[in-house]
Image (cartoon, rainbow, N blue to C red; front, side, top):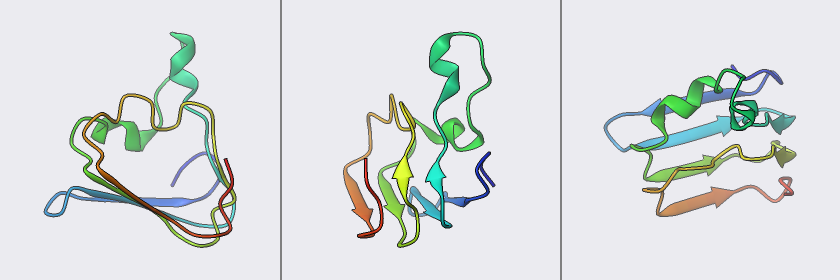
Length: 81
């Protein structure tokens, strides 16, 4: 779970990071150089596919900063950024 109560899951076989829930995906506060990274950030270099399911309402600042190998993003209509 992220800080806002959304659920995230990383599938190592498909290299897919999926978010579900009904709130914004939390900010990546670690970008300030002092805070701890969100749990899913451990997969920043491995993630190739990102799925943000219907219900997620937004994406926090820098949430996917440095996800340089991500090639596809699927996003529900409820998400704004």
